[in-house]
Structures are given as structure tokens and as C-alpha cells.
Image (cartoon, rainbow, N blue to C red; front, side, top):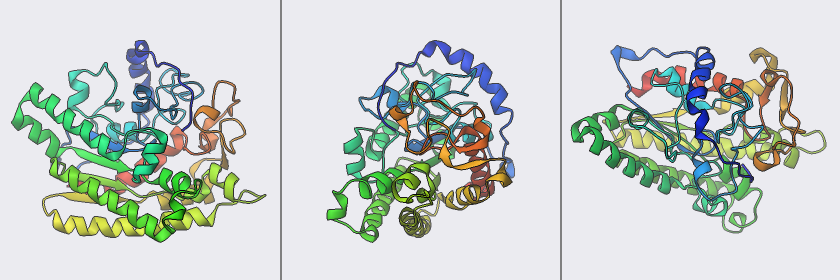
Length: 362
């Protein structure tokens, strides 16, 4: 989530694609109800879903350099994904049998088939709060919607209006945002705390989420999943900042995340009643990640309180770089850096959350 910029070579894409087949074979495939099909997947939000858009904008918040991508494709292939390998965007595309990898929309080398089957519009370090995006110089949700409008024009030129309408209405959309608002913009920086308390700040976040969902619906989306916040206080970085000498989970951030999630879930219910021809699905990741952290061995992990990169206490983005030592067995760690899960953890979270809720999209 921080700085350092190393150009990503497109030369390796074909190689990465073939190597990714090995990894994707380990991904579960969901059974869609009533022989339904999903033509494309579109994702919006922050680094949980950003597959490399920040590589192509002027921001310090990039991760297109080693050791990111340590286990991607053939190994040691940083792509702009904030992890050691695949992230939820890729796992969901594979589970839906759409494609192996979900490309970033800003990739200048996208081909026709890439566009028609879905892309990521997400931007690492972004949030619901406009101030979060302005500080990080990343794509806001409004910017991401503008890119989606641009996308619709492109595919309409390719396949015509009727096919475009079908793709847009039958596809699945995922939104994941808010972690940077709570951990950084509200608790780390002083500006918002001069204007809001945590209750009114989460109200602001939910109002921005509502605006985005209304706009996305107006653009034709009908199958929308909205991801809640994880147990933010148990992220390694937050343990380091607010967990005291023993680096315990920070109740402050966890309570803020739960407060936001309750408000977001209620707002989604209201929107669902208004948008009777749409399916809006709340996706709870708080519960599964909390259980993983508290019962790591149950999921095949050994380390839950620090990341694999460097000390694991604070390294993220540019602070996790080619000088950083990384753990030898990533599969033992829930977290890759001090903020983002490993590929293995993301796979478990994606399967657990998405598989349980797939029928709600239809």
C-alpha cells in the first residue's frame, strides 16, 4: 500500500497464464442454480480486489515489485496484486468458470475477450471517503464508475447494444471498500476526527456506499455483492499500532468495523427492497477471518499475528520490498504483509464467503 514503482513487463502474461492453471486447479468451482450462467465478473473497491490498476496511475500506493507476486504464476512475478499470489478477484472469476485471472481495466494490452468476460476497476488504498482517495491519489469509486461507463461504450462498439445489455445485466459485481477509511483516514490521521466521531464517520461511509450502489444499478448492474469489513483490529499493522506491548487485536478498530458492517447490511436490505429486479448480497468476511485468526491451526496455518514479509509487524507496500526477507513457507501464514492476507488465506476466505452466498445472486 505504499511507494516504489517497478514497471510490470507484459512479456510474461502468456507464461503467467499457463502457470496459473496449476494454481487454479486447486480452486473450488461453484454450482450455479437453475443452469444459470455468468458472462462476466466486475469488481470495484480497494486492494482486496485491485489486480494491477494502480500500476498505471500516478500514485505511491503500488506493489508491482518483489517480493509481491512471489508465488504468482511461475513465481516471483509482481503484477500489482497486493499479495504473494492470487487475490479474491482471481478466485471468484475461476469459481464462476469465467477465466483464470481477472485483469485490471487499465492494462493497455487488454484484448476483446478480456473485456467481454470482465475486469477489475478496483484501486488499492481507495475508500468510500473522498478524502481517503485524495490523500492516496488513487481511483475513487466515482472514478471507477466513470471507467465502467467507458467500458460499456467499448463493448457496445464490439458486440452491439443488445448483447451489451445482456452482459451487463447477467454479470456479477463485487464491491469491497472501507478498510483504508477506518484504519488510515480516521484513526491514523487527525483530520476526520476533528469533524466526526466513529458513529457519524461510519454514517458517511455508508452514505457513499449507497450512492455508489444506486449509480451502479442505474448503469445496469443487477447482481451485486457487497463485502463488509474484516476484523481490522487483528491486522498485523493494527496490532503493532494499537495492540500494546503484546500486540493484541485492537478492539477500537474491530468495534468500528462491526459498527460499519451493521449499518451497511441494513442499508443493503433497504436498497434491495427498492430495487426489486436486482439481487444485492451482503458478504460477511469478518466472521471467517476472525475464526482464522483465533483458530489458525484449524485452517492449516501456524502464524496469525504477523505478516510473512520482513518483521511482519508494519511492512506493507513499499516497506515490503526487495530488501525484505520473507518467510520460507507462505502457506503457514494468514497474512502476506502487515495488511493483506496470503494467497492461501484469500482462497479460503473467497470460497467460504462466496460459496455460501452464490444462490442469493439469482
